[in-house]
Amino acid sequence: MKNGVGMVGLYVRDQDEAIDFYVNKLGFKVKNDVKNGDYRWLTVQHPEQPSFELGLFTPESPALDAGSVQALRELVAKGAMPPLVLIVDDCRAAYDRLRGRGVEFTQEPVERYGTVDAGFRDPSGNGWKMRQGRG
Amino acid sequence: MAAPGPPGYKNQVPQDPELLRRLLRAKDRIDAASHEEWPVRRLARVSAVSEAHFARSFKEAFGVPPHRYLLTRRIERATALLRDTDLGITEIAFKTGWRSTGTFGRTFRDVTGESPGELRARVRPATQALACVPVCILRAAHRPGLTIAVSEKRRQEACVKDEAEEGEVP
Image 1: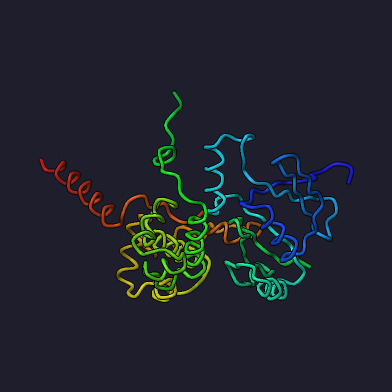
Image 2 (image 1 turned 90 degrees about the vertical axis):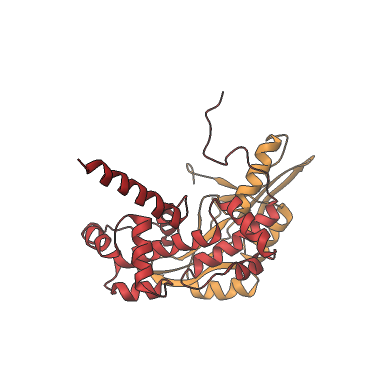
């Protein structure tokens, strides 16, 4: 990829917990994990999507003021962050597999609009839609 | 001075994110099965808090008491079924968690301003292809706003009506 989106960041409540979820449960790989003092730049990558990184960041000071840190922690925990979509080749099989690993599903697989989708959340509260690719 | 935000925006007491995450679990359960009965006891158990604490914290977190949130999800489901299916109104009432069509019809009108039949007649011809938008997101977006209790809304509308009628007296 010469031009395009390389990374999108999510706020999570705890980066170690996020690694356990995105890597051990969802099957992403750690791409960058760089610590500098208290700051930690952490990104993961889908094994089939090498041009895109998902950043897993904690809202923290001094980059943000204390009020914003608290507000963001609350918003993430309330599920108020924007939706995320994971594409899978077989939604029902992925649902069984991920549920077996302890992923918290909010919606069982449902067939509609010519595809199948389910919903889950990461431990922090970020909501994912898991949708079967069309064809 | 900064413009005032929506009610409760700035002057809210901070809430514990760990508690909020557990309250979100109860909200997710309502979303997944709004046709089911969700007494506070059941929801409090999902969130692992006491019943009194649950009702208060849920309202603080999500801006509406849990029973009213449930009501708006049910109205949204009913609206979608009226729009997207050929199911009869009675069947839709029972499918979306009401025990009587009378209560359903009255509550539906109080919240949306029109009866289920009127809404169906109005929106069906206009239904457009929204297939590219994930359904759960659309549903959350179409949930009717309900900033006051239904009983309060009824009372206010009754007052307005009374005043209008009084005005017509010569």
